[in-house]
Length: 93
Image 1 (cartoon, rainbow, N blue to C red):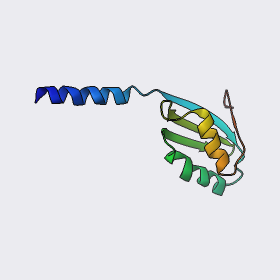
Image 2: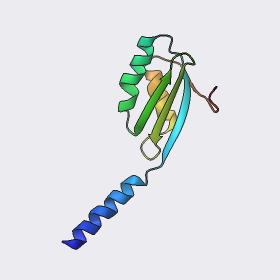
Image 3: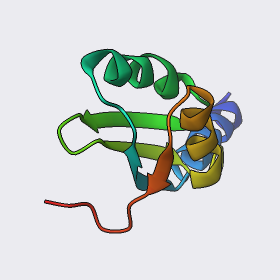
């Protein structure tokens, strides 16, 4: 019985080790509907943990698990929705 508890704790510890990264994209969203389209679709991509948008600056910030997805896959997911998208190395403040 005790051994089973140790295995469960070990499995949970491995899950929390997943490395989270963040990427900021400049996206061709022009209106509230564009923003909502991104907010309704991208968070459901595998590995996405958080998504925020800034319509005025046309920025989309995504936090994701790097063992489940990467920046290129996220960029392609946004482009698949019909937007142009480029990574911003240092977001404008």
